[in-house]
Amino acid sequence: MTAGFSWNLLADFQDMWSYLGMVNAFRAGTIVAVLAALVGWFMVLRRQSFAGHTLAVAGFPGAAAAVLAGLGVAFGYFAFCILAALVIAALPQRGGRGYTEESAVIGTVQAFALAAGMLFIALYKGFLNGTNALLFGSFLGITTGQVATLALVGLAALIVLVVIGRPLLFASIDADTARAHGVPVRAVGAVFLVLLGATAAEVSQITGALLVFALLVLPPATAQLVTPRPARSLILSVVLALVTVWVSLFIAYYSPYPIGFWLATVAFGLYALTYAGTAIHARMGTRAPAPAPAGA
Image 1 (tube, rainbow, N blue to C red):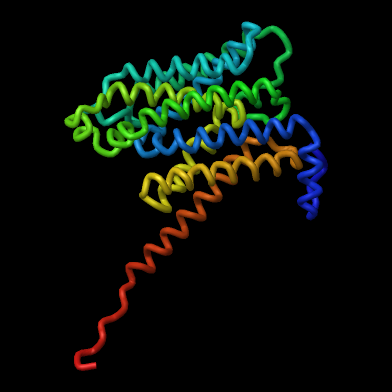
Image 2: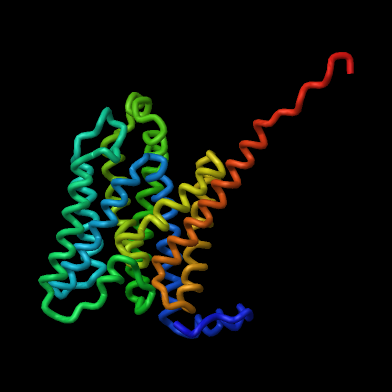
């Protein structure tokens, strides 16, 4: 990162992209943004945000355990996030309508994951100064190999999402009717949770385990505020996620603060502005003109 950006944005971008690490950061961020926007849209629709947050937190002990075992951090993220997804998928569902924030088991998994992460860090005998990066993200040091891994996993996840997209949307809107029409609601939900775990693992490598919601929740939630139509909302979710990542990477490059902070700030700012705009629009729409006097 440098001392600060100037008003010559073209020169700033040229300076930033002269470093391979920043080019890789933008490539990785773009991949992560698209996947998080699409998978997160269904997560918000299905009201599984708490489960998604737990899966993201599970990436922290996974990354810490990988460091302790001398393995790649990415392997730890994916292994623990997907394992946590399988655990949540095995939970009994309340009337087939998915997982709720009141689920004590999901909360227990989340608390245990955080505790295990701190244990693995304490057991590590070498010099570990990347705890903040595991929790709050970092765009520094992303290699071309990591970008390729993110791209392959993201492509596989998107292919699966396309395959289950229609029954998943049906089951998310009305699980009982979908089940009556022969949709395997439980199986589709389990596959989606694994996709959500893989997505959380990908996003965690940019945002850190604790700030995954910056991409996984806020852009999809913002898009669903704007339009209820699935196709338009999904496209808007992707656009918002890309804007969030690109703007945040640019600012983070020229600032001393972590990328996760800027991702959360930009995403929340877009959500707050959209919420305020839709609230004002709805309020103005309810003010019907006064009826004309009789005989006018």
